[in-house]
Image (tube, rainbow, N blue to C red):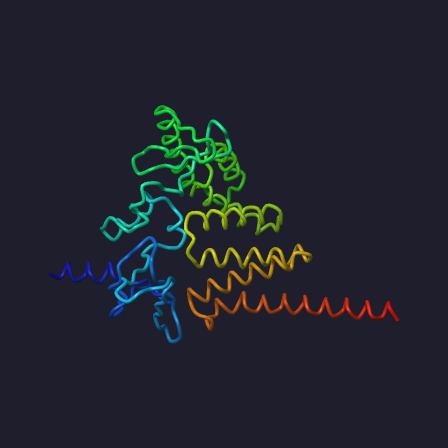
Length: 297
């Protein structure tokens, strides 16, 4: 009985965000997991645990959260289920029951344009451009390559940027819209950001956003911050793209408002940047207007 009690505490607790240790909540700790959760949570004032709906709910709908980090929700079904073994259960949520895993895309070896998606039965769907189907031998070869690349990517040292780039370039010839590319795009974006290599930074961030919205279209903190940081890059390096910068900040703000409310410190960041960009744009318009009036007189 004591072991059962300790296990119940261990597997239903949350890590404290300020101090080492675990916290057990009266009701929120009873929420089940889903890889497409109906709710998200954040800390509020005085360490309050705030649960918010991330989708429209009807009376009687189950309140679920994700036991995984946001970045893990962007990995394949098999990887997610493996990670959830830490809680000693196999996830059977709607996402995990999908027959086709659209986070495991392979570049079509015939047309080289379309994508073949893997299924839970270790087969590949027909190409979505040319409709070709790989042979059983080709399928087995690609699945085996995928296993090798997953192992390789999981062992990458993100500080060894040349090695990450080598693996990334080789993987682009085999995969498309695959979660391992997202992982490497994240590593290469961080490296480019550190050295302020603008073109590389923007391309890898764009690919991260594209994959996230393709594979998991719900608001997450990762996606909101990707949008905000993309807006920062546009604002700093492309002053003629203020309209796009404004869109990025708006999307970041709207997602964070869903995730943690309009008054949270996370939401204040893109809101203030949006206000500054709009203020600068209005000031520029006013200056141009005055200059035009001066020229006409």
